[in-house]
Image (tube, rainbow, N blue to C red; front, side, top):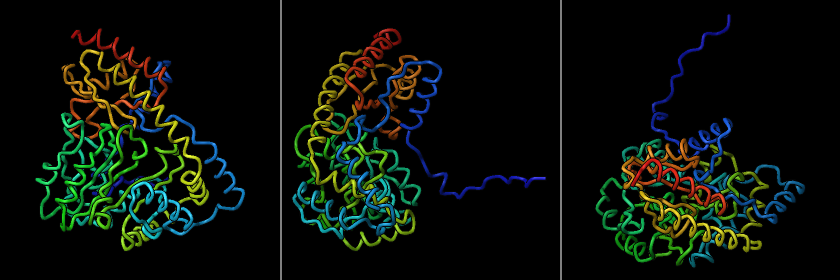
Amino acid sequence: MGATLTKLRLADRMSRLGTEGAFEVMMRAQRLEKLGRDIIHLEIGEPDFPTPLHIVEAAERALRDGWTHYSPPAGLPQLREAVAEDTSRRLGIPIDPSEVVITPGAKPIMFFALLALVQPGDEVLYPNPGFPIYESMIEFTGGRPVPYSLPEDREFDIDVGEVLEKLSERTRMIILNSPHNPTGGALGREEVAQLARALGERDVWVLSDEIYSRLLFEGEHASLAQFPGMKDRTIILNGFSKTYAMTGWRLGYGIMRRDLAEQMGRLMANSNSCTASFTQMAGIEALRGDQACVEAMREEFRRRRQVIVEGLNQIPGFRCHRPRGAFYVFPNITATGRSSHEVADALLEEAGVACLSGTAFGAGGEGYVRFSFANSIDNIRRALECIEGWAAKQLRL
């Protein structure tokens, strides 16, 4: 007789672990496609462009040249140097390669920052609506998540006054994300400066998620690390996925003060050992090679943004702000009289358009849905026709 399976007993912390709604909706959409349904995918958050050829060729060369072995846990010195040079030039602040940690994707920087700095019961402020893994990782590591809003009437920029009101003696970290997922909002330089001044000498760390910083359509990107006294208390999270259409390559990095970077290296050694060496060599080419691919991708996203914003604003029940960055719109759907979840489900099942409920990004997303415009203009226009047809038939507004 075979061994009797015992009931799976998970550690309590697993009950605090969330997930990403985008992958769940994508799988639902794929199941409908297998049944013969035509589904337009506006749910997944990744560029629909191929990785630029010169980056792919760099990876191929690296494989042939033997970059197939372990690298140091914190990353190859060559890539750490390239990241330091690139970020220093873009932000106008001095960055040493020893302050850079390379990781397989950017999520480990988020996870490691919380593991290294947040004790059980410490409070972490985070945007809600916001990337769902923020809240998931805060709870998983034992912190207490404290949400702050991104008001629509501020074009989804932060209200610094609200953030400051939520600071307490237990606050250990603030998470910022600009440009922002899911709203497409971006932090204004004055708001960032105001926050920097208000934090003063407080013993509060800031995790600044800048993964969409190269996909900004108006103005200049503002990082808290640029302001006096804040570089040593800011952890910049960034990577190659969005800027260079390299989501499947799993290549990210964090920038932080040297003593924390050393601890991040220890966490890498204990978890992933290192990031794949040949992908790191491709990352060097991405940063130091021709940047025309980035400009072309951003301009195409700008054109798509125009189409989807204008189209949604002509559909009864939808009101859509023009995002300043990333490749998402976050239209207000309260006029439909339905919940975010109901609208997202109906658009998938009845209109054949996959999108995400605003509540996939937290309770603050109620009243909204998120569409990714990382799809062709032709498909975006088809989606708008489907949404308009659904609204005319179902809402009767």
